[in-house]
Length: 75
Length: 405
Image 1 (cartoon, helix red, strand yellow):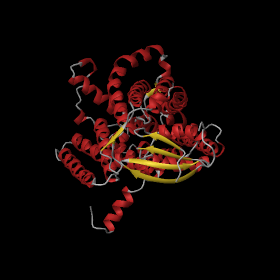
Image 2 (tube, chains in turn yellow, purple):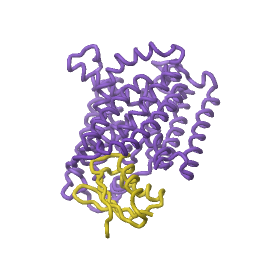
Image 3 (cartoon, chains in turn green, cyan):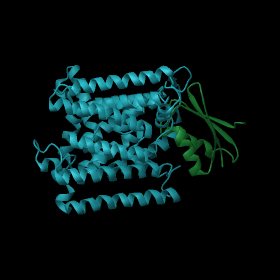
Image 4 (cartoon, each protein chain N blue to C red):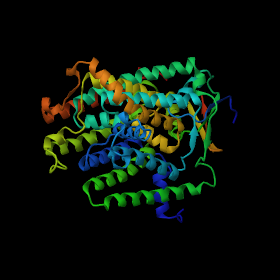
């Protein structure tokens, strides 16, 4: 998967990852993919829910080295 | 841990996926009703005050101290065992990890906790004791406290969005995660969870076997605290979201979950108050009716609620949200808990008397809604307000009129 932007939200807790995600995605073009790195377990439900609400596409989620990686395609 | 079988399936169904928040809300309302029957509806800020007062007592600052040690204070014990319950739950679900946020975020945690300390002592009550229990207890002041939370949340959210644009450095910088449970070779974390549960059960037994009713009540608070912590962590129950989300993402999941949970508690509390259920031997029915109804109607509640709303939004967790997130390992919320506990006795000693001098006496009254409207009228009023809030959050979820993101 080609990642166009990466956003580091490690260590941050709710609501900071969602606010940063929203800000970052606004600057991207439709179809581009953002990778968000985070450590808040709440993001596992928050990010897919936010994508569904805002018309962005939640591609997948991985866990590596104690951090989550979320991949979101701008809708 | 178990051989793959039905017990393992049960364990996985409880600890592999996040529970819907409304399920957590119903369970929490039932437990709060049980706490009401045992002694007093669920609250949290009084526990922070007691822990802070003990801290000052140990430091030799007797003017801000207390004679009630933490191990004999029901709410302080609830708070501590909620942290422990959430810790155990996070270990079981492999969601534990000591998450050190950037320094700016840690400072925001401390400031948020401090504002919550001021807000809850000025307004009398936090989102749990003041709002969740207060509204269900048909307190007039609780309605103004809730309005204050809402206004404070809106202002603080505007600040956070501004900070993100103007001072992005605050939420950036060095961070790290220690002992994350999601990594391989962390099976010991689940065993630690079981050991802690056994240890808590032993402590409960230690209290209840002393025989006195006070110790039995304390023992049950420890047990219920552990269960509350597990439910809170699994359902990620968050009252900040209930106030904030309509103005941030527009999602109505959290507000609806909290509405459901207040309605369940309202039913339980009303039955207890109406019939005077509980420790009626020692207390008059009137004293039971006035539980969770504080002398804060209306301006005192509004001011305190506003300050608390600012604090909980900046910290990213209310009094209880701070506890379970602290148990899950978020260091920002450790700072929030510390700010809350340290500032609460200071606010009680210096800020509250000052506020009381400024505001008219007639604006800090105890108002039990059924005294004015009867039980039927009071319950209908609360249900009507909840219905209006429901209509607003669902309409806003569809239209996004008030959502910033």
